[in-house]
Amino acid sequence: MVEPLTLTASVIANLAFQKILESGAGELGKKFTTEAIAAMDSLRKKLWERLQGKSEKLDQALTQAEQGDKKALEIIAKNLDVEMDNDETFATEIKTLAQQIQAGKIQDNSNMTLNSTGDNNRNIQAKAEQGGKQYIAEKMYFGVQETD
Image (cartoon, rainbow, N blue to C red; front, side, top):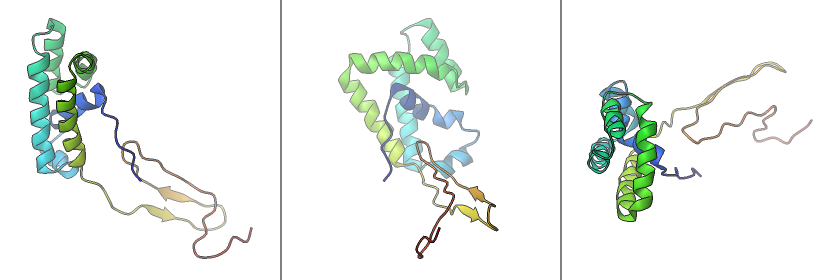
């Protein structure tokens, strides 16, 4: 079972600016549904409306994030965290949008590759989504009893 992503201010800020931070719209379209991409725009707009004008440094960070600067998200996240603490209604509103974006994330269900030959040779290629776990075992038994 996949654990739900904790919606911190940092995660929300990253989701809001994900569309800009991705290298191309085509890549984003491979990771998120059309609805999720539209929700990113709504979330980013809400953050702009809420945070713009709070300080010169924050305004500069918002502008830099719009230009693809990932470091600016740290400043945005810190200020967003304060706003979320001060206004539960706002926090609920943006968390709902963030959940919609997360729900629209397209899962990569392609196969993992396991190449195992000989006694001690292993070649395992595995993928794990954000927050996922990978397990690599010395021995694996499929439909037989362990004999070692």
